[in-house]
Image (cartoon, rainbow, N blue to C red; front, side):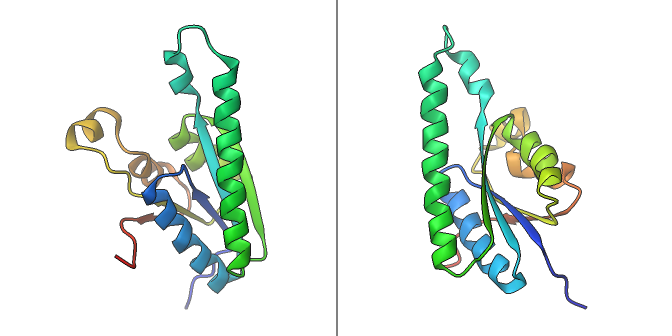
Length: 149
């Protein structure tokens, strides 16, 4: 019996780990003829640190997210993935990905990069990937390294 995935959700943020997760998601989407949902969640908590909430920071984050996702979408389509959606959302990335977006796109697989946190950081905040593994209702693939390394 082989499992077929239909709706894959991959979280990208411009990091190297997310790049590896994206590359894996393209290969899996092609093999399964699945819809690939590329998501970037803008962490609104980081805006709270800015004294006077500056609208231009949110605008820059939105522009960065849209540009990042457009590039990934083009790359996925060039690689032969026919169904690609891009999603920009706001909030706490780990819960938005694991709960809101996973439900919205009916994800049966979430792919994310293993975030490089120190043991202390992991203890204090927990990694995004760790949270997604615990909270998601579907399969989760945590990509550790670049397969070409």
